[in-house]
Image (tube, rainbow, N blue to C red; front, side, top):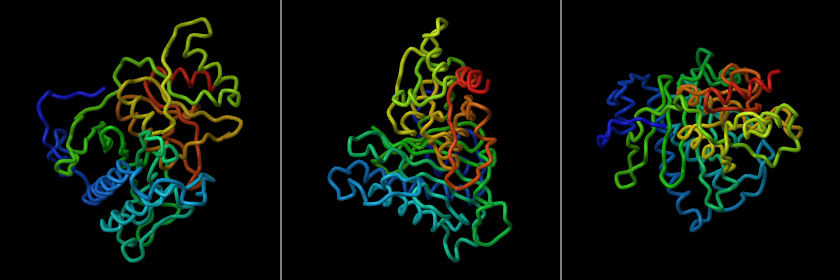
Length: 338
């Protein structure tokens, strides 16, 4: 859910970041530049997503990424647009992208940056041809090495080290959801002026847990017995309370989590026999979503502990994910950690 004073808001993202927003955030200038760079890139990506069926960016690029997934033309385009925008900020020592196996860095500029950017350029791109909502997910961390080009050590930090996280949803409208570690806010792109306007000053999951669960039940045969029992319990099939009577699953992390963030409930992508470590990537999918969820008053778990406490072992390591209303994530933990 979100809270507003009912008045028309004319606070832009840039204004919010320099302290004009209701929360009067005062940010490191470099972090402001990175977020503004992502916002600029997302406007370009949003434009191309909106006209994808009319452009030559629709379809496969021919090849697979480090995940073994088919690369879409728009994946490559989105990564390039973000990299170009971030390079101009001179604030990032290196980056990690879903589409690139190794660390991305800039030659001379890289030595000046104090931060690491981890991002998924276009989450849900495999469904772009059927007009399902997609998104860009990002995480910002402070580097741990003193200077020079960023290293693997700078990248492999737990989610608790994030200084900011967010995502951009390309849907009926384009929204940027952001946390700076002091709550969650939302901005909507006003295409008439080309600016992200603060539309959701305070986003919270609230006390009401919600009635919807979001999980790919097509994977049911591959789940552990504890995972199966958890989902059956949610639906009241074990003879007790019906915790969630509605199923909502899109297949795009940004879209599924966005609904959970605004409506409550739980989103889950568990480990299974096909993906024993889970499927979602820790650094640029699970960790930023977990930070947003917890800053909104929810919880984020692997089923055995907080996602934000997981120390990554490599750039593209995976983790099980349970995020949403606290009571439902606690229920998941009670089944999965036993």
